Image (cartoon, rainbow, N blue to C red; front, top):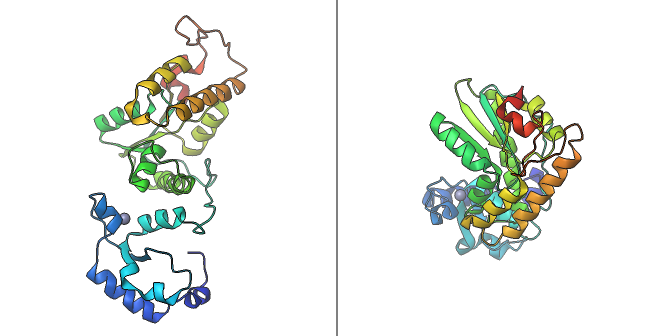
Length: 270
Ligand SMILES: [Zn+2]
């Protein structure tokens, strides 16, 4: 990917390969990995099933070739030893521009009901949802929350950022819900200032409620403790970042201070 044409040639990617590759793709026009998952995607990469590492026999062995789309090839390369190595991405990409579409940001800890809220709202408005967990599961071809491969998480973050980048080119009539945990007012202020959403909603949930929801969610089987830990960390960050509001809570565990952001709900966007 990041190699010069010179080094690509040294590794065997010559005009002969170009010809063989084009012929293979015309015989095998669909991505195999997508096909295995029941999705039809055009293939545009001939992948070496076993990495050839410069071995000409492995390189030219057609039995070692498979047709993949670029997305699947990136996932495979990233998860192979000695593949991409570290994939650079930013959780808070500074290059993002304000959204031109109708954008709603939904924040909160794991188990606070962000995705249920966003999915329902998006369905009613025929809008889209940008959710890192969903992107990870699509890239990994695994059920939601199950893939914890760092390389796939990094690729998914990059794809999420690409999609956030395109929000500044969408028509005003398009509605998009963006899900991000964003603990602490400072992070949420950053998202407000950067993407200029129509609304930013902080899901009103206490830690106990999040833990209950996480424990009851069958999709989180096997990752429950990690999600509970993440919820706990979210509330710690939230606490550190909010010295201005009274932390007094009612019997339900929710803050009693009317100026507390949770009690302002969606109005907190303004
Ligand atoms: Zn594919």
